[in-house]
Structures are given as C-alpha cells and as structure tokens.
Length: 400
View (cartoon, rainbow, N blue to C red):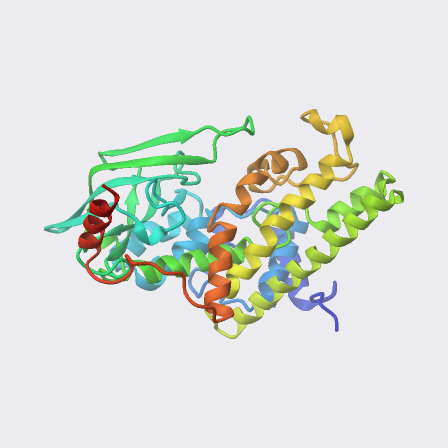
C-alpha cells in the first residue's frame, strides 16, 4: 500500500504552484481570500478541503517558502468553536483578525489548584446584565503575554455537577481592565512560553459567550481533541520541527550510523516516526468522513510526545561534549525554524520536557485511552456528581 500522497504532476499541486508564482510574498488578505490560510474551513474562509488536499496545500506552501499568517489557536482550536457556536457579533469582531494574524489568541484552561483535573477549575463568571464578571486565575497559558484574545473556560453555575456548570468565553486580554499577565521564566534562555493570568472583576459581554451556559466542558474537550491531533504529527515538538526521517538523514550525513548502538536506536525511532505519520493520516481520513476528534486523538499525542523527546535526546547525545554548546550545528542539514525556533535541535531539546505535559499529561492521556477506548473502569471521582460547591465544602471539612 502506498502511504504517500499525490505525485509531483498532480493537477492540484500544479494549481497551487501557479498561484504561488503569482503571489511569492502574499499578504494576509490574499492568503485568506485564496482559501490557503485555512483550507479545512468552509467558505468563505477556507475551501472545505479534503484531508489529502490539505496535505498537498501544506506541502506546496512549504516548498514555495510561504508561511501562514494566522494564529494556530484561532485556526485550529478555538476558532472553529467560535465559527460553530459563537454569536454573529463575536464572529464579525474576532474571526478574520484571528485567521489573518492581526490578533493573537491563547487558551485559558489550566488552574493552580486543579493540577491535571481541568474539571476542578475554580475561576467563575457571574452574569450582570449584558455582561459576565470573571474572577480567578489561570496558569501555564502559552503565549498569553502576546495574546489579544483568550478563550477561557470558567464556572458559571457552582451548584451544578462538576462538569455541567462550565461555560466558554472569548476575553480581550489587552483591552479589559482587571487582566494581569505574569510570565513564567523557563530554562531555555529564550522568551518565555508560559504565563499565569489573573482576572480581577473582568467584564466580558454576553455576546462573547461560546454556546450556551453549561456547554463549556463539551466545547473544551473538542478544542483539546483538535489540539492533540495537531500535536500528533511527526515533528518532535508538538508536531513541529525535526522528524525521525530528519534524524536518520542527519546521522547518516555525519557517519554516526556506522555505530551499531546508534543505528539500533535510530531504527527504533524511525519506526515510531512512521507510526506517528500514519496515525496522522488516519486522523485526516476521519476528517474526510466528517468524524469529530475523539479519544483516539489522545493516542496520537501520547505516542508523539515521548517520541519527540527521545528523538531530540539522541540527536544531542551523538554530539558528545559539543552537544552542550548552544549554536553548535548538530547535522549539516537545514534546521527547521518552526514554532518560534523550537523546531531547531537546540531549542527543541531544551523545551522537550514540556511536551509530555502540555494539553494533557501522559497520565491523563493513558486514562482517556484506558477508559474510552479499552473500556476499563473509570477512575473514581467523588466530586463528579451532585452540587459542586457543596462537594468542595465537604472535601475541605474532610481535609481539616
């Protein structure tokens, strides 16, 4: 079976190449109007493209050196929820600016007290006329220091069951009084990725709500499912950057495959990389058949994240002492500049401890796979049923 897509003379490739010749440096507006910015979106934003056409477009744009303008959170995670569940006012205000990269977006999910239990969030939103007032704190928010718009999940009904009282909103982070963003420094030596965000009586118009009150858990799971699928691509850092194929090519170029131990490890990683690539094709096949991302997206991310860590570790290991020096070239092959430089071997390696934590830890993903795919008994959660606020009081009394 041939697992590679459309050949070089495929008419779809030729059409995209012709467009790229006419638009070697397209503007954000030209990209959006062409449908190539978000080809998987329906018209008028995208092309309603099949999975195969998406891959062809991605391949041809990369070949032409054309990069998309839009923010990934707007294009792949929260934007589709706005398109499907947002009010006309919110769509008109936010969609195009997010898709064209005029405004950066982020996701405000995790909280300090919740750990990996997203459903335990305590940030609240209280209705006040035509607005909601948000109070609370989020943490580990990627890109919040540059984000204009945040997609946040909060508790709107503290007396509903744990997962039933949640609602999603869009928040204007840079224009809303009461929002404070505090960077979390990391060990990469580069600008921080993560932030904590505080909400002190922040007013958000009711028109910025996604779906109805109580829809928050369902919408959040859809967003995370889409993000996990995106992170299940072969690139080492959340789907971006070097792949196992790049690793083997680089090792061959510097003669390291002559070492039997290195060759064995590289072969294992190459096989894993092909598994990740084919799982991504399966996901695209599901998209063609209009299937929403389900628990199988957890499998893709659960395999891809540790695979990326091992891939980056072997690349640095073969350098020996030179691997400890920043900027020392790992392989005589071009390095990816994907994901704000984290696609490079150096920065990717420094960042790699985070990739098994973001968008669900390995433990959370194993629970998803065990419970939803293998049918194993669900993990006991005494707080999942009944009045959430009363359950919290009971837990506090028990702990005292």
